[in-house]
Length: 401
Image (cartoon, rainbow, N blue to C red; front, side):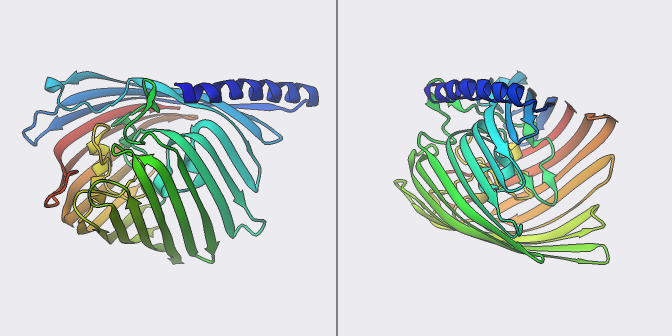
């Protein structure tokens, strides 16, 4: 925990300065609390006996001044009341301080340092909670955004946000790996330091997001990682039918003993009718030898493979294994009280999944969600070292505020 201790000391001084400043200048303090308590049950049909029940809780508070300064604290914990023969082990950690940050935000600049949710950066490959700092700057025309992220650890909670569908249903209940494992960083992130930077350009429905990422010791291999890529898209709206075309490409060099070069090519076409019904198709190819995979702590796909893989797997996104080539079709709907996602992927990666979420109660900012879903998932790359399969039914309940 030596790394976080530095943030803790810095945060204490900074918070004291902010409070003194607000008192001297009569600046209002706004407080926003958040939290969730959820339970997830899984029945395994693969024959492996990986039945389990998991409970996960997260709570915190964000404080902000009217002049733009802000800070926050949060904690997360998970427990497995039942794990048949200790085979499932969905959670890699019991808990951690998920948020402890200071920041500043106005119309043009967003800056956070400490432990914080990095979602505001809108960088697909590093969503969720990071330990480090992030800066996002928007030009006055709102067409260009420049951003920079530094991270020296990452709290893995299965974060996977699609900008049309939202988060994966119950994905935030399926896994937890703390920033630190004792005095070492968690193995999913690796022992090194990560720096990523990019530019987001939007104009009349067009989108272009190039990026570069460097990690000095990434993943379980603790090896040098370099990534460079871009996301391009176009969105149109015709009488309530919204179409979104997205093309993504990435080159990766990972200094592993085997198969260090990888490449990702990904095309996705989505249609959304009256912002309620969603359907479409896509195709994914991952170039490179079968001994590696794309390093992806998060992503913006519509798959449920990450949710079912959990925390204790070297490649938490099995659909990005080297040598993959597959297509997929998807559909679903999202009404006020119910959401449903359906996916069928075929090729080297197979997924047949249906997940549902029912908003059974809502009062003010509090809500109760219940859901059930099933997924058959398998990636089978000849000679691959990160093959994964699952065949399970899941039910969940989540109270949030």
